[in-house]
Image 1 (cartoon, rainbow, N blue to C red):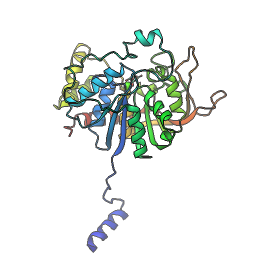
Image 2: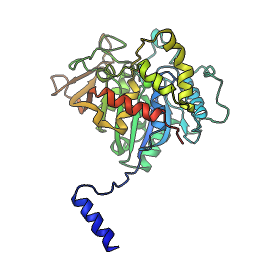
Image 3: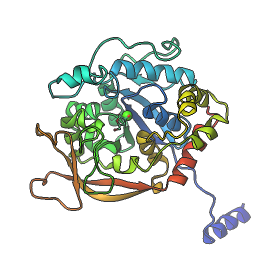
Amino acid sequence: MKRLAACVALLALLGAAPAVAQPAQKIIFDTDFAFAPQDDAMALFFVLNSPELELLGITTVAGNKSMNVATADVLKTLELTNRTEIPVYRGAAGPWMHEGTEWDRKGHGGWWSNDPAPAPPGGFATRKTAEPRGAIDFLVETVAKYPGQVTILAIGPLTNVAMAMRMDTTFARNVKQLVIMGGAVAALPDGGGNHTPNAEFNIYVDPEAAQVVLRSGIPIVLSPLNVSRKARFTKEWYDRIVAVDTPITRIIKERMGQGFAQRPGRTPLMYDQVAAVTLVDPTLMKTVEYYVDVDVNPGPSYGTTVGAAQPWPGGERATKMLVQTDLDFERFITLYVERVTRQGK
Ligand code: RIB
Ligand code: CA
């Protein structure tokens, strides 16, 4: 016994003490999900196979598609990947406050709609259903149960998070951290929008919710288009994934194989995957401390994130957060592919 203690002391002195296992980070995955190859699904594959993360639940929100589609697709994905133990909660079916425009209702594939979802590829899930409790209740109750311990990975419009803040005024102070895929910061390189000249999609579709969340005081890591544009998935990495056979890689092969066969040079951006990988290894991303706010004034800049190193006149409510600007792509994609090709549980 004495010898063991002496040995540990010596190792500690040499800086080689046995690693103490860290408890897994509690996370909630808040998503405008759609079936693979869409980026929310590709981000979920990473999270499902990362033992550093304890996935407490998935909350769905309207964005890429309607909330009903997001829910049906995520249920099917969990069933196909044999992860039916993870609870799924239905969230907001439209933006928090603003009135629907023609574009909202018709121009973007019916994302703002309560119509029943069409069947996901392979048909609806048969063994997995959404929880009876809604996403906002789940967010509020879970954060209250684990104060200061829950990180929310928010990779869709921020409607659910804003509604949880309004439902429980202690919510914001009890969230450990928010990692958000959203926004584009024009003052930094590669900062144009992808939906309007300066607005990014997730923020544009619910700017009022985004403003409330960005101003909340919750510690935020923002993963904007500036960094997404440096993370392009290529056929080389697709080939490495599908060389391994697992339930996850089978879905990727079925859903991306034809696209890469027809157009091997395509390079889809890995928006939500960058935010997900940040949870496991934030050292892969370069960040700056920036003040960021959201423009909610109707007009040409509606839904734009504005950021700067210092507050500016008119931007006094901008809040300091970590903004990702770049990443070490080789290390990022190596970690991503290693996780996605794991045999899983
Ligand atoms: O602008 C990219 C973001 O919008 C991604 O999160 C994508 O999934 C969509 O939600
Ligand atoms: Ca998304």
